[in-house]
Image (cartoon, rainbow, N blue to C red):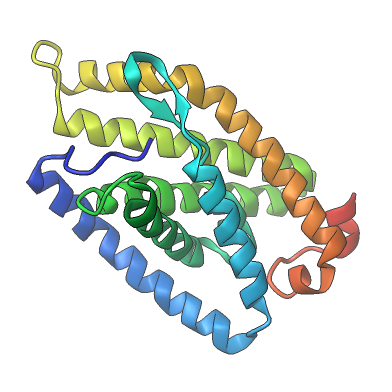
Length: 225
């Protein structure tokens, strides 16, 4: 689901970079504020970043030679809010482009927008709505992570359809094609990511309850339930 190096036309690569920039400026400001507030949160921040890096580095072969992967963005967005989620996703994508040749520097704007920005916003929004409605914590976290993953996949499909419209059916035809390519592997991956995020957050609640309480607005008892 990372768009590879050099794949997007130059105008699209620049456009998505410019679209991502304001979100990243906001995210780095939120990160700075969080570190000033409580430096102990660095360990939890590192855990969220590591979770995102590992999950989004996994490449699962899809049809027509493409690949899909989990995103891992929901954990950071749920724990720290979407702003810091933007930064986590961006830094992870940068390291993957430089160290793993996964994605690329020319496409980092597009990949940041789909995975870090859209994924974080969707995850955090669903989590907040679920909490306000009094929904079960595990169900809320599962839905946040699962739907954030699918939102990433839909956004990537939109980006590719804009860049490469079908010669006959145009943007809509290309969108259907790209979404169909990813759907085979992405739907089960999204479900798996939702379950794994619930498991990881539950473990953090059990083994690092004091650290988790400083950034996540629910009690240790709820985390263990």
